[in-house]
Figure: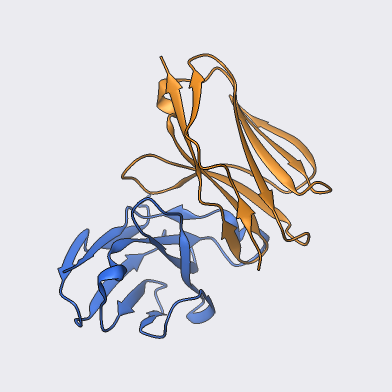
Amino acid sequence: QKEVEQNSGPLSVPEGAIASLNCTYSDRGSQSFFWYRQYSGKSPELIMFIYSNGDKEDGRFTAQLNKASQYVSLLIRDSQPSDSATYLCAVGNYQLIWGAGTKLIIKP
Amino acid sequence: EAGVTQSPTHLIKTRGQQATLRCSPISGHTSVYWYQQALGLGLQFLLWYDEGEERNRGNFPPRFSGRQFPNYSSELNVNALELEDSALYLCASSLEAGRNTGELFFGEGSRLTVL
């Protein structure tokens, strides 16, 4: 059974701090890794993807992938209240396996 | 450019009835995915269509079915509705099947309520 695990949270972070979201996966053959953001009552939207080991930066967001340890993380720098949402990790090749999501709350 | 569109936005049915949900992908996208998201739960994969063919289905009973039309739009049918089918049904499209399959663009969803 292929699984993707995320801490459900909520994760509470002060405004301006770094939010760190983590995800572990069971399938060592996974090649593609995605982070989606879902605001309450809205559909998920893709914010980052990473295919190779290491870090990938896009603005305030950094995705980190460690295939040997089978984890992928998302760092959000200078957290803003608008970053408050549920963050979904998705892992796979041709078919994605989704985590249940981590609820992030940014406190003003 | 129009995003993924889904209809209807809301649908209310009673137990035993059938529901049909529709999805139009982004222009040029050939892959369509259907997901179920029950209240407070994660995304559960239902079906994946690409180039008119069903490529994969999730762990759902056969009363969940669908198809993809030549214009790549898709519909999801749920027969013999049960109370636990009440959920948000999300459609997503991607440019093509392949490594970037996870780069999905979601519609706003169809909320199905079964009474």
